[in-house]
Image (cartoon, rainbow, N blue to C red; front, side):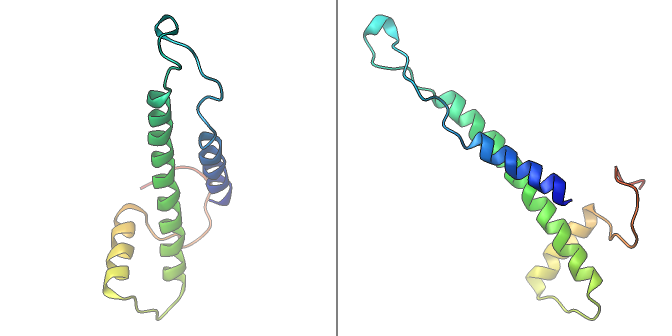
Length: 103
């Protein structure tokens, strides 16, 4: 999971770079520059998707840590989050080959 998280963080950092460093004249020189807003918005949307994936990975790791600690009682809201994570991701009870779950 650490390598995947690192790759996602690298992708987020890469997309955080400026869209364009130079300005392009448009409308036959009537306008000073062409806005790159559509490209910036698209990059932002991609970053949001990556952030969601990163948060999901963090929730998976936190749920696993909770399950490994015996006798731990979670607060109601935290318990609800833990239960929601576990509806999508089963507890990892032993090491297994990397890849999709067989379930």
